[in-house]
Amino acid sequence: MLKPNTRYAQLKKSHLFNTIYRKTDEYLKANPGNKVLKMGVGDVSLPLCEAVINALHEAVDDQANAATFHGYMPESGAPFLRKAISKYYKAMGAAVKENEIFVSSGACDDLCDILELFDQENTVMVIEPTYPEYVDTNILAGRKIVHLDAGEEINFLPIPNEKMKADIIYICSPNNPTGAAYDRTQLQSWVDFANKIGAVILFDAAYEIFIEDQNVPHSIYELDNADQCAIEICSLSKTAGFTGTRLGYTVVPKNLMRGGMNLNEMWSRNRETRTNGISYILQKGAAAVFTPIGQKQIRENIRIYKDNASYFMKVLDTAGIWYTGGKNSPYIWMKCPNGMSGWEFFDYLLQKIQVVGIPGEGFGECGKGFFRFSTFGKPEETKEAANRLCKLLKKREA
Ligand code: PLP
Image (cartoon, rainbow, N blue to C red; front, side, top):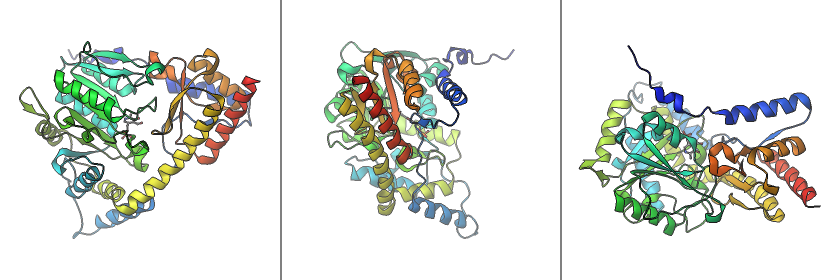
């Protein structure tokens, strides 16, 4: 008799977005004509840049001619794209070789698949509040998960201590949902800790392009000995607007050994089994991101999102409300005023100013009393939402 994976029953029902949509819909039905500004969702609003679009068109044309046509692509990525990504790392001061880079169809896929490198008996550590995929994928794989609590007093950036035990450690910096980012010294402490206890860090760098502080590393490989303990997972989703186009890459260093096995070789073997590669067309589009013109154009879009962040940051600074993010991240994680829970603040904003964000509770217990704004929205709507928030917070003080 077939036995299903009963661990699916252990997954928390994802009420978060459903509840947000339901409450928003109910409000709109009761108040037709009011404009609700959606500032919660972490999806981009700006289109792909011109350099990428041109490269995609050219690649489509290549597929129309026998001389330039491409069939199956190498399962770990096209040499031209791996080379371009390796150069990108070099420019940020990290030595990552082409054969250490694996092209994927997005970070989400690799965050799940990469777990196939590890035995089920390993213990996983996630920092709370957390991006939910780290938890769900490990529940499904049947691993023990330990939750490391983060809070306001440490700016949502815990550092390791002697008592902690884990085999796989998730670090997302800049963080989703908190927007907090580890500086060099803090991140080095995680690298040293992982090397000391023989753990592997899964470093999620999906938001590296938003970093402004010189002291915040863009890649974990900027740090000493990270190539002996860390896998880095990257995505063009937020960097270059590829959420609907799909492309990411994962770095597994040649020096990463555990239990006498080489994780780079294992991942290479995994790719041979698991995928027939990423579409030639998409890889051509992605390669354009790493050209000088592509970099200039994607950074123009990032600048627009950063301006969005600045509208919210100004309002919160003026109101004296505690928050992280915004500077090195497209997310702003604010403390709800007057001791409100995230859900209470959600209702308050919806009813009073018709602005929707995400209650911190959606990212775990430690998110209670906090609220996430995304700055990926349209500039005019984001400005309007920030203005409405400003007026509301002023009224609150009066
Ligand atoms: N990692 C983090 C922290 C994210 O926030 C996201 C998407 O929001 C992803 C990974 C997934 O990115 P992708 O679109 O490449 O699957």
